[in-house]
Image (cartoon, rainbow, N blue to C red):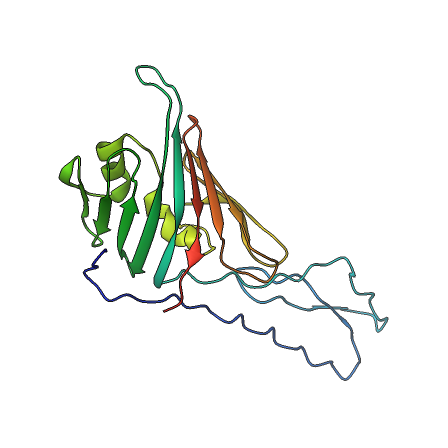
Length: 228
C-alpha cells in the first residue's frame, strides 16, 4: 500500500457562475445573447440608432465555464503505453494499474505491474522527482517526464496530466478544442496531442485521456475519480 508524504485529499469542483442578466433600457432596446467564453461573461449587443427589435441568433450556443484545475485529487485506473519502432530500438507496449494522489504541485503515483519494471512509486515535491522500483532502485530527476524515460524508456507527458485530469488545458497547450458544454476535447502540447472522453454530457471531468506523440508514442489512461 502506498503511503504518501502528504494527506490524502479530494478534488473539488467549481460551480459555474451564472451570467448576469442585462436590464432592459427604458427605450426597450433588445439584446442579443452571445456564447459564454472562457475569458469572461458575454456582452449584450444593443441597437445603436433604431428602436427596431433585433431578432435573437437562435443558432448561438451557450458554453458552460471550464472547470478550474484541481489542486487536490485522488484517482485510480489503468495506463497503457506504446513505443514505436525507431532507429536503434524496437516497438514496445505495456500497461499498469495506478493510484495517483495530488496536493498542489506535489504528487505520488503508485504503479502495479509497471511497464516491465515491477512495482513502482513516482513522487514529485514540486522541485525534484523520485522513482523507486524493484528493478531500478531509486532514481531522481528534475521532472517526472525525464525520470520515467530514464527508468523505463517510455515517454509520457506527466507534467501536463494534472491539468488534463482536471479537464482543462495546461498553460503551454495550444489549439485547444472545447465542446458546447465547455469541456476540453483536444489539446496540443509540443509534440503531444491529447483527446478527452467523458462518461456523459453532464460530467465535467474526463474518464479517459488518449495522448499521441508525433513520433508514434501513445499513452492511454482511464480515470476513476475517488471520493474523499
